[in-house]
Length: 266
Ligand code: PEP
Ligand code: MN
Image (cartoon, rainbow, N blue to C red):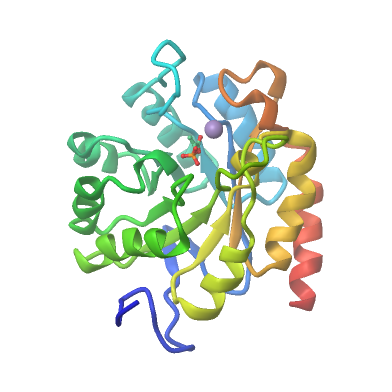
């Protein structure tokens, strides 16, 4: 790779500030919430419990990239309004996905950190638009993207003027099909060693099975990740999307505690 903005000498690290939360410093950042925003009362209960357990930021999809066009597509702006209200109530910055460059300006009124989903990592039109705004971006790895392709996607955003980029490893497609994807923690080691932008891990989409989310959360932190984004719900079985990989909000406290312990020896 030539001399890129994503590179840098050590000490030249980029920390990304999302309101009062900083990603890339010593403290590991936990983002959690449901796959999809469902309704205000559910979101309120989830956020209240997560805040209590030390979660820093709230996630919730309002524009959902579903494999089937007949699956729930998200509450769109209605969902973003709910998320913004609840984020404000609990003083938690919010992360949500944007898929269409035409929605970007309007979405920026609600969202604190724009998530670019795995299916859109190669959407260069969208990436260039993100460069024009200053909002922090959570750039998920394309499900079949190499580390270099993913870094070039980050470079698209940064070279267009926005260096507030955080990478998110969410698992890649391999021959293995016991789990939904394969969590490539190699990428975390490589990014932390050679590149200057923060990287967090999404064990929920990487595993697809909630029972393995706690252990792989800890493994991600041990590998050097700057934080985690975990799907959680007050009643995972009833979640409208990705229920099988969603953990109960109750489990987050234990993960948060163990992460702190691991972080002490890093
Ligand atoms: C999500 O975060 O709910 C999501 C759709 O993730 P990904 O783009 O990684 O599949
Ligand atoms: Mn999901």
